[in-house]
Length: 366
Image 1 (cartoon, rainbow, N blue to C red):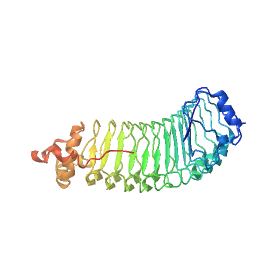
Image 2 (image 1 turned 90 degrees about the vertical axis):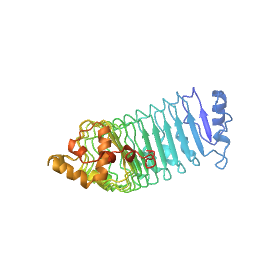
Image 3 (image 1 turned 60 degrees about the vertical axis):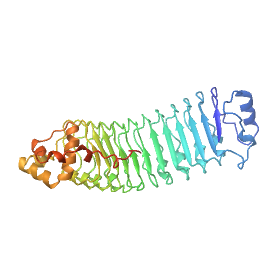
Image 4 (image 1 turned 90 degrees about the horizontal axis):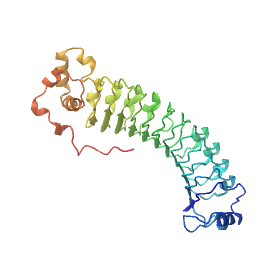
């Protein structure tokens, strides 16, 4: 791997053509304090000798990369980090046909990526972190059918995404605070992880979410404007973990929630206007639940409560095991519980060890 650390580098000049001694002279005479150790300039490297990974790090005065970057046809990974004045990437980026991974971290001046990005036919990983002036991604992103992981972490000015296609398995968008919508997702059927943590302006999820038969983890932590989940939510047959903290506008959960047969961890906490659970919830099995601090939540479902004490008791007897577990969890979470529900159980049934079984718990991860 070739690493370049130039604290005072302003530009890799557009006249720097890889394959001539001009590049060696530029580096040797102007930047004698190279911090990365031995530097073999591209001017003396053939494609067979050249590094396949290039990382340009901590160049705070770097403002541009040359179009001749596209001549590095052999590189497979390009990393740019701590280049706070770098305004963009050249269109020649699209000629790096061997590139499989592009990482851009803490490049605060970048506002957009070139349309040629869609020409990177073998790109599997695209990761942008703390690019807080990035306002859009090119529409050509939809042409990256080999893309497996797309990470946009703390890109706080990004308002929308283009249509995504192909073999995408991880879509991680934490702290994209200006994002208002997620594109239709049925065209990425292999998606397994979706992280929308702290997407605070997101009001809804696409109805096509239910078509993601491979989705295992969904994080909606601090989606403060999210009002509801799509009706198709119960079709997520592979969903194992769901986290919803601080969803301050969420008022209800879909009736299809109980269809999530694979669900093993459900965390719905600090949702102050969530009023209750759907009746279908009692059909979940072997699922660790956390409903802490949902001050308005009522259990059993409201339609059962409305029919009076006998209906509540009958409900508890019919769904005895799940109701017993929920009773303990909801009570611990300061939720509203009718006294008839307590009376339906013997004291020896209300055993917290039946609720929090560490052997059935698992580490929640994206």
